[in-house]
Image (cartoon, rainbow, N blue to C red; front, side, top):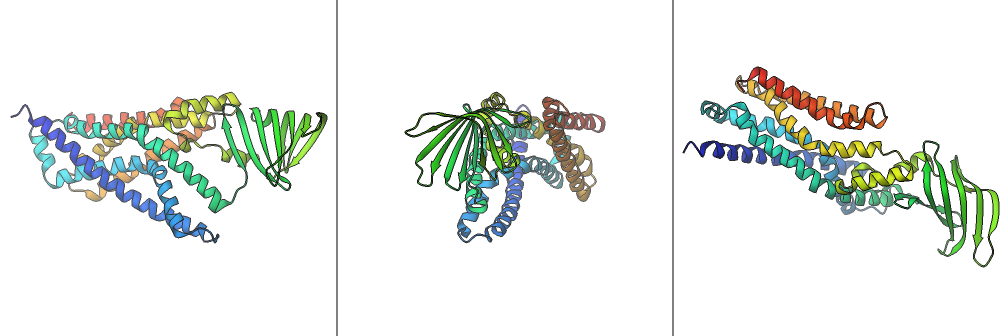
Length: 366
């Protein structure tokens, strides 16, 4: 019987933690959805064509993306809740009295956290990327009413812009950063009915305040020969910041396509540091989740013996805040090229795991 006892306890602990995690996550998502919906209702009140059903749908589309932010907190607080329940029912005392070390009964919980991390990377993140992309489209259409579209693909930069006479589609082979000088530029002009009017091919294009400036260009019109010009301008209300904000954000790019998108951005001339940090941060998620379990154990195992529930909750809040702050701070340093990408993405979970293991080795019997 004793041969099967540890595995029975392990399955029970894994099940107990999974239920706690789902409960905590559902509560956090419900709170997030409520606040997001209220904010969307406030923004939608400025427009007449945004019904309540659309606002509720947009809140649901955005929920998985925000859920990824609260996921580490759900991991941490569900671990604290699990340890508190085990202590309250005296199950923790029985487990320790049965001869199981702290690492033995933490193992199943850490395994579940690692599994959640893998599921997050491979399943939840791609689904979230699709949904948040749909949300961004709806937000642009109903809450911002933007008429400009920017995208980056393997063929370079594509931009669509409305004009007084109709619209244009601009394509650039490469973009020289940080000057934002477009090279190998083609611009297609259309009238208000969508009919092609003319095309210009320019060696370079610069975005100045209020206008595009094309240099060394060739103009081709329907039914006419090519015309060479040295200089031409095109009025625009676009800014560099607006163009950069129009790109697919890391959150809109599924994990499986991130490496290809990073290569595309680099080939086009854009800085891919933010994308690479996001990619490695996703890879480090299972390790971070495991570290959160260990940190929760360092706070709760001693305090549950003295029934210090308030201190345990307070300690969990402090740990969650410190890990979140360190992660955000190092990601910002990495994005600004102050520290290497790998250090920005992997240092927070590694240092959190190291600290947690050190504390348990010091305070517990191991």
